[in-house]
Amino acid sequence: MNFAIVGCGFIAKKHAKAINNIENAKLVAVCDKFETAMIPYMEEYGVKGYTELSDMLSDDLIDVVCICTPSGLHAPIAEQVAAAKKHIILEKPIAMTMEETNRIIDVTKKNDVKLAVVHPNRFRPVVLELRKILDSGALGKISHANCVVNWNRDQEYYDQAPWRGTKEHDGGVLMNQAIHNLDLLLWFMGNPKEVYSMEATRLREIEAEDVSTGVIQFESGALATVQASTTVYPKNYEESITIFGEKGTVKIGGANALYIEHLQIEGYTEREVNILKEKVSSDPWGTPGHEQIIANMVESINENKQPAITGQDGKKALELVLAFYKSAEKNQPILLNEGVTI
Ligand SMILES: NC(=O)c1ccc[n+]([C@@H]2O[C@H](COP(=O)([O-])OP(=O)(O)OC[C@H]3O[C@@H](n4cnc5c(N)ncnc54)[C@H](O)[C@@H]3O)[C@@H](O)[C@H]2O)c1
Image (tube, rainbow, N blue to C red):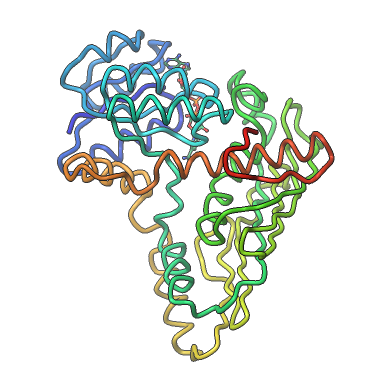
C-alpha cells in the first residue's frame, strides 16, 4: 500500500516513521507548500516531493494520503484528496466546524474512499484495559467521571507558526490538546447530552483559550467535569480520566494518561490490581498509536471494512469541543441533539 503525506511539519515525522515500520506500507511521496519543509523527508525516505498537492494526487501509485497540515486546512485538502480517489488518514481535529466535517464525511462516502481520524490514544495499553473493564460491567452503573489535561505549551510553542492558537486554524487547549482526552471520555462514557463551560485566555498571547473548565451530562444521566489548560508551570503535569461506578473507581493518569493511578473494584484482589498496574507500566506506550492507525488503514482497505476510528468518531469529539466553545461564548448550557449544527 503506497502512502503519501501532505504537510511536512512536526506530526508528519510520526506518520513517516510509522508508515515505514508497517509491513505492506510504504511512503512514496510528500507534499508541502514550502520546499524546505519537505526536503528532509525526501532525503531520509528517498521519496518524491511536490509543492502542489494536485501534482502529487495525479500519481496513480498513491493509495492513501496522510493529511498533516494545520487544522483549518483539513477540510479543503481532504475534499481534494477524496476527489482524487485516495484513502485518507486525517490528523485531529477532523476539521474546525461541523459544516466542514459533514463535507469531509460526504465527499469520502461519495468517492468511496476510507477515512480514519488520528485519535491514537485509543490504542494505549492503559486505555484498552479500562475499555475492557467497562465492557465487563465490573464498575456497575457509572455515576460520574473527571477528565483533566493540565499541560504546558509555552509562548514559544505558539509563536512557532502563525496558525497556532488562532480560532480559524487551530483553536485553543480544547481543540488542539484536550481533544484526545475528550475522545477517550466519549469512548468510555457514551454520547453527551448537555454541556456548560467557561474558558479564558490567561497566560499565553493567543486568540483562543488556554484554560477551560466545564461540565457534561451524558445521555446515560452520568456527569463529568472537564479541566484543560496549557498554562501549567513548567511542564505537562497531568492528563487523566477517572471513572466512578457503583462498584468501583478507576483513574488512568500521570502526565500523559499512561498509567493506572487508582483501581478499586468490587471482587478484585490486591494482587490482581497490582498485576494489572504492572502490566500497563511495563509497556505504557505499547505500539505507537500512529503505527496502529496506519496498520489499521492497510487492513481496512484489504478487507474493505471501516477503519477503527472513523469520521463519525472525529465528528463526535469535535462536536463536544464546539459545544464547549458555544457554551462559554453564550454563557449558557448547550444541548447536543442529533442533527443540531454547532
Ligand atoms: N495526533 C497528534 O498527536 C498530533 C500532534 C501534533 C499535531 N497534530 C495535528 O497535526 C496537524 C499539523 O500539526 P503540526 O504540529 O505538524 O504543524 P506544523 O506547523 O509543524 O506543520 C504543518 C505543515 O503543513 C504545511 N502546510 C501548510 N499549508 C499547506 C498546504 N496548503 N499544502 C501543503 N502543506 C501545507 C506547513 O508548511 C507545515 O510544514 C494539526 O492539525 C495538528 O492538530 C496532531
